[in-house]
Every structure is written in C-alpha cells, then in structure tokens.
Image (cartoon, rainbow, N blue to C red; front, side):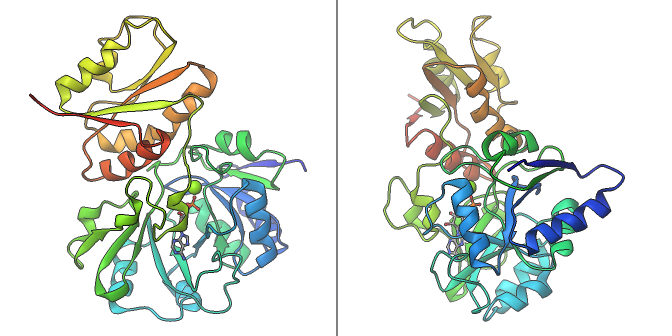
Length: 346
Ligand code: AMP
Ligand code: MG
C-alpha cells in the first residue's frame, strides 16, 4: 500500500479532508496530527477498522483505543452515562489534552474498547483533527501513530517512518504543540483517578474533585487501570538510564560518563548540563532546565534522536515530577525500563 502524505496547509485541504473522511468511513486508516501526538485514525464504530489499527501498530488487542470526538455532543452519543463532574471537565477542558474513561454504549464495538465495558473519549483541539472527525462523520479511534513499544510520533515524518506502507494516508499538520499524550482520567465514585499522566497537569484538575494517581502505574505493577500502561513503551534505540533529583549531584553523575571509555555514551540532557560536556560527544540538547513546556514538546524528538546517532548507552537527565513533569517522568521511566537513579543531596 502506498501511503499518501497530505499537507493540512495546502489550499485544497478542505477538499482533500473530505476524501480522507470517506477513507475512514470505508474502513481505511489515516494518520492525523493532534496537539498531543500524532494519532492513527480509523472508524471507532467499525470493529474491523479497529483490528486493522492493532495490526498496523503491532499492538496487543487487549489494549483499548482512545476514541476522538468533535465535541461534547458526540461524546453523549457514545457514553452510556455521564456524571455532572464528567460534564464539567468536558466543558472546561475540551477541546484539549484530557481523555475521560466512561461506561460505553453498545455502538462502540468490543474491538475498539479492548473488550472493556468502558470507552476512553477525547476531543482534540488541533484544527486538522477536528476537520477529519467532522469529514468522517463518525468518531475516530486514534492510538498514537507509532509501532507498538516505540516512542510516540510528534511529526508527520515520524509517522511515515513507523507506518509508511501500512496505512492509507498521513495528514501533515506540523510539529505537535504539547508533545506528550493526553491525561487519561476516570471520575468513578466522584473522585478523579489519573490512569495516565499527560498533557493536562494534575494540578489543573484539583479544583474539581480529589485527585489520585492510579497506584497500578507504579514500577512494574501488573494491573494498571489503563491496560496499556503495563506494556514496555517509548523504547529508544539504545538502553537509557536517567539521573534525577539533586541538581548538582545529578549533573556530576551525568558528566562522569563523558570520561568513561568502556562504551559509546550519548547524552539526553538540559542545555546547562550540555554546556559542560566535552565538545564532540553525541548529545541531544533537550531544553533549559525546568522549562517543562519545551521539554514536553521535545521529549519524543529526543528519544528518536539516537536512531540516527547510534550509541551503546544513553544517559538522560530527569526533571521534577510536578506540572507537566509528571507526564514527562512517566514517559522517561518507561523509556528507560525503570532505570531511574535518584540523587539525593548530602
Ligand atoms: P495510546 O492509544 O497510545 O494513546 O494509549 C491509549 C491508552 O489509553 C492506553 O494505555 C490504553 O490502555 C488506555 N485506554 C484506552 N481505553 C481505555 C479504557 N476504556 N479504560 C482504561 N484505559 C483505556
Ligand atoms: Mg501510544
């Protein structure tokens, strides 16, 4: 199959997106940009389309798909019931990087929901995503558009690299503004439980209800509430170890690897640390220390960087787990296979 690349900025995009909507309705697959990461879109109401998504990604079929809607009215058609809290969150944070897990109607097939009785709903803000959902006239199941286990795509080229030849088309809408996936929550029992930290900070939800993080997403637990959280994720081309905690000790630990000759090391570090590395070392300069927005934006670019700059071991620098830092450290924890070393001040 030849994968067509379609620019969201071309003059004829309005026409083009109608054709792509028809591709989705017919059961085809289209990669599309969102403000979080690129999605792999298929008709959420068609179990066969869901099967194609799992096959294209190489994703285990017990790992359900997030369903993208154009607005809250479309969500009402898919949810068996919505609580006042869920409606408030939709009103205040949609369109945006928040996914709600709610009881599903039968119209959502078991393939889309991974056999669960719930469905994860999200309303993206990106205009090209909105245009595609409206053109399709059906909700769009859209997991991240990467091969299962690899870092999520934040550009159309990333999608082509992983899924070129396996899907019908990709809409190029430029780089993703936020760069980490949506925050997934459940509001069961009137509390907010974060199933996956993401582009909407935990702190933003605290005004609405008590917020807790699913204990099942901690290191290696077998039963997270979001089935996908148990799988290896975001693996870069070489093993990654991340140092975090006390700034001075973290920096010293990272810089010590520049002296070592036992293997080739690559560095995934802040501007401040990069400035102290010897010239000529393979380094991805992530951003200014603590600038969580730009670090979220460039996280997956950094994990992809070492595909083209091969090394034997990547040494990473972490950030504090507050605000967007929670989502970033969750991704780095998975990308490193839990090789996180916390440096404490003396
Ligand atoms: P991705 O498709 O890569 O953005 O990942 C979607 C995440 O949402 C995975 O971790 C899924 O397991 C999770 N998810 C999707 N639907 C549900 C659901 N109904 N209940 C719990 N988690 C879900
Ligand atoms: Mg994913």
